Image (cartoon, rainbow over all chains, first blue to last red; front, side, top):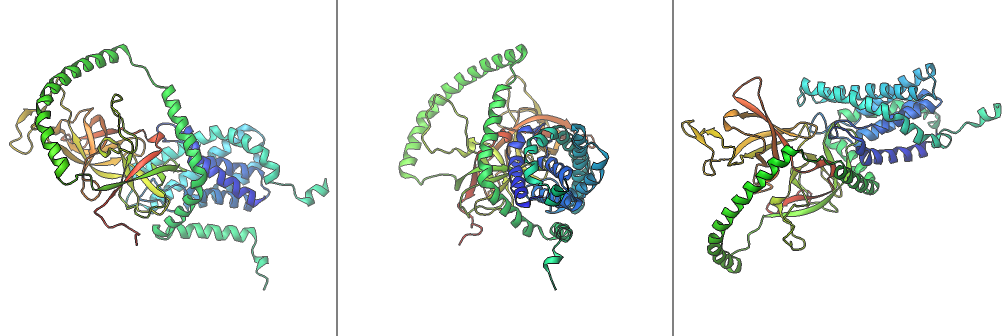
Length: 182
Length: 330
């Protein structure tokens, strides 16, 4: 993977997510699509190694963490989303071989799974880090919100993946060794 | 020893994961520096995108506006007629008092000390939203200002006024603007973060002012005296103070308000003038509904709909008191 280009893409996606991405929000912003998660699944489907998938997802997760500070306590901790993105990417990378990667259904299912795991773990982690501020009612409400975000992101994933498709060759070049074998 | 050979992607990933765990455990002040740097990096490009976001949303909302039903239109018409009568009555009364007031006002204006709200209004612009919808925060760009204080109230910049009256340029009417929330602790030059009243972690002391409606009079209990039932009139309509908290979506909730106050939908809600930042009551919105407290029937939960449209928020004012010492100055 070309990491510099990937970082530029991650930056652009973060700008989109923190601004115009909220145009797609529903119920007064209760649920909005997680474009960074959809992009993380895109990376998982195209990279060659699990390490690359996890590193890419970690960067996207860290950006999500750094641009979101509200939710469970006065200020949420930085770091948990990066870890949960990386863990979810590892799982998605492992199960991608079992599915047809070019199918829209695969993108939708994998993104739903990715988001549910990453956001579910993030909410749990943040609640545990801020137990003094958050009650179990809030935890339940946030978990429900996380599932709604996962479902909504999954539905919109095909659009994100189709928009990113032209970048596939630029971001994930075929190594010389593989080319010569052909 | 060749250190470069040790820098494998696997090692980088391990270091990154360890860094995440460490960041989650260190004090918030340190990580907020990181957030601040990120917002600074995002602001130049996010500003343009935010303009697109707020403009588009405002247009879409204007297109999708719901029309009034015949019943609502009738109710509105009768309400307008009723208000017109009230206006006529008030106009006659005010004519008389205006003459008396004019003399006194002119005298005070010419010879008395200048009275104004002891605060500076710092214009700021919303440059980014939260990447995740769990919190209701906004990133503001107040320019190169190191005078911002945590907890400073933020209001809308646009005011709604009678279109037949021309307003002077650069006029800012704070008590006609809508209260949006307060600045969080992490306030730096160029970027500041606003926690909206609807955020789950937002807490404030609110003040409810009951609306006196000629058609729907209400009986309240005099809690300061012998708790006797009496009709709500302008004389006994005392403001009700209560603690409020955002619901995490789009409303402000005032739990545990005494049911004896007889708060009803349509009553006005203001931010309590705490004195440190604002000496006036900043308008938040109106009571949307009142729900009984199922655990204790003596109380009700008041749900407040903010008057400001948070989704199209763009230009705001930060209230900076002139009487307080500024943080980070000097």
